[in-house]
Image (cartoon, rainbow, N blue to C red):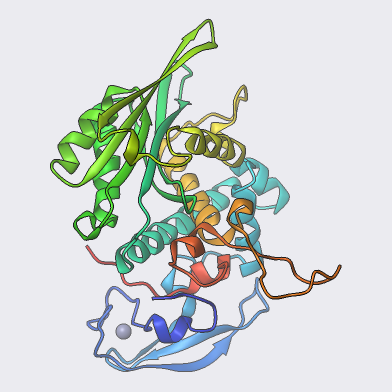
Length: 350
Ligand SMILES: [Zn+2]
């Protein structure tokens, strides 16, 4: 499947999003367009649909949880964008002159849709590149005495942020992350071994061994030794596989470490030396999901650009084709927008 703005309605079939309807998410149901409407807060027309089986109308906002949320699409987009620039919920509320609780509700809706979107897209397509790096970032929870860790899984060649997990710095959390990643990648289909590099934390080794078992993978640990914050030695420990399996610039954890910096910039809860640390774990989770969508599907990544071939090098000619991580992964054809996320009809499967 290749997603872009124009083929949205043909690739993703519309369905009835009303939970109480007997044709909820049913495929053999006829949905027709049935006029448009404008709301008090938004003068851009919204589409209405008619569910033939249940004989009722519903709005296109029914595909996200933004129905009856008293905002315009422009405001929703602004709130989502500001969430990805390291602005706190109170800050966004101030900019948009809304109540902070309203913004928190919006963020919850965005995040839920982003979760469904990312998961169904990753499962619909067979992900084919497979150089995984994992790392963890610390933050605080509630009182500053308690630490909260974010475990992140990152595909290096496409810069695709595969998934994350919030929790303590233990094998339990790492295992949950590896399980999620394993769910997306169909490892038995791969011809080359699945490459993994992490730091020396034993939790990864335990998690990888228990989840991946006898699958075809190679694993390298980068052991860094520091004395008083100063790096003394870097040791490479090949847990599974040998030097020859890690060709090119792959014997490191640099990519994920750079990505951690990006995350710290984007997520207000992760900023260092600030008072804006997390007071509520689920808010943190929501903010990370919003950022995952923005980073993977919306934002061009500079190192993924490709030169335009077969064109004269004139001053005003386009020189680069820019790509998002999702485009590099082969999941989408162009950079997606927030509006597309809000309106994309995606079935919830449990
Ligand atoms: Zn219906």
